[in-house]
Length: 411
Image (tube, rainbow, N blue to C red; front, side):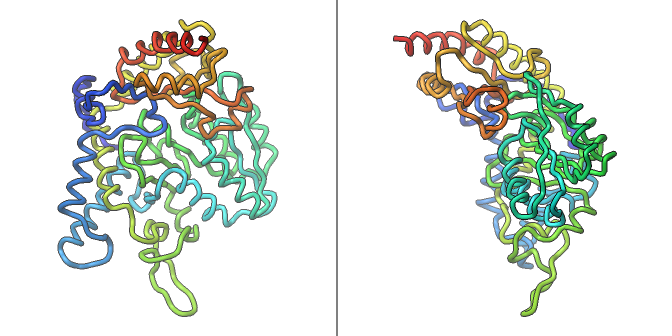
C-alpha cells in the first residue's frame, strides 16, 4: 500500500484547496456526494493536458509512449493504494456506478434462473438497480439483509439467507452514504465464502476515509469513484481477482479491447484492456494518481482521527437543537464520513435551501437510498458529510444557523 505520511495540519491542508480560497463564505459539508480537489490534483491534470497529452496504447512516437507510461503508472498507483496483487486486476471505469454495472453485466452473464444476489438495505441505488436489471434479464432473485434501527446489519438474517442456498454473490456497501455505518466486511466475506458465494464491495464512501487492503479483506470485487477521494470525476475503479476477470466476457465493444477482429468475429484482449473499450480517461487518470498519492502523504491514522473528531462534534452540536433526530448509530465512534438527521416540523429541502443561502452546503433528499429511507419510516433526510478540509468551528457554526432557519421558517 502507499505509505508516505506527513504531519497533519488542518490550516495547511485547507490552503491546498483552491475552492476554499475564494473569499466567499462556503462551509462545504457535502463531500459524500463529491469531494473538493486539492491543488496537487488540479496541477497534475493541467500538466497532463498541457504538456503530456496524447491518446494511449496506440501510437509509437515518444510522446505517445510517455503518455501510455503515465496512464499505466496511474493503474499501478491504484494497485498499491488498495494493495491488489496484480496491476491487471485494476479496471478503469467512469465511476462506481459503471464498475458495479460491469460486474452485473459481465460476471452476471454466467448466472441462471434461481441464482440469488444478496444485498443489504443500506445500499445505494447503484448497488441495487443493476441487480434488478440482471433479475429481469436472467431470472435471478434478490435477497435482502435487514438492518436494525441504527443501521447495523442483522447478521442472523444474513446467515439465514446464505443457509437457504443458491447465493452466488453478496454485494454490500463498505460504508453507508446516509448513516455512516460500516458493515463488518471481514465477517461478511468469510461467511459468504464459506457458503460458496463471492463478495462485491461498493467502496465509494469508504475509499476517502479509511485504508483499503483487498488482499486482507479477500473480497472478490471492489468498486470506487475517483471524485470521492479528492480526485476528478469521470474515472472510477473496479478491482476484481485475476481469475474472475479472465473468465468474464467484455462489458463493452470497441477499440483497444480486442486482440483481433475479423468479418466473422473477434477475439478480446486480456484484462484490463478487455474491459476498457475506446479512448480511456487519460487526464482523469493523472488526477486520480495525484489524489491517491496526496492522501497517502497525509496518512490514514491522521485522517481518521481528524474526521472522527468532526463527526463527534457534529453529533454534539446537532443533538443540542430542539426537535432534532439523528439517524444511525447512537455512538459517534461508529459513524464514519457522514451523519443524517431530520428536524421536526422542517422539511429537509427547506432546511438546506435556507442554510445554503448562508453558505452551508448540505444535501437533502433520499440520497439514492429509497429502500433504506423506507425502512427508517421516512421519505427524506438531511445529510452532513465531512472531508479532510473541514474544521470543528465550521461544524459548530451549524447550530445557530439551524436555529435561525427554524425561526425564519416558523414566521
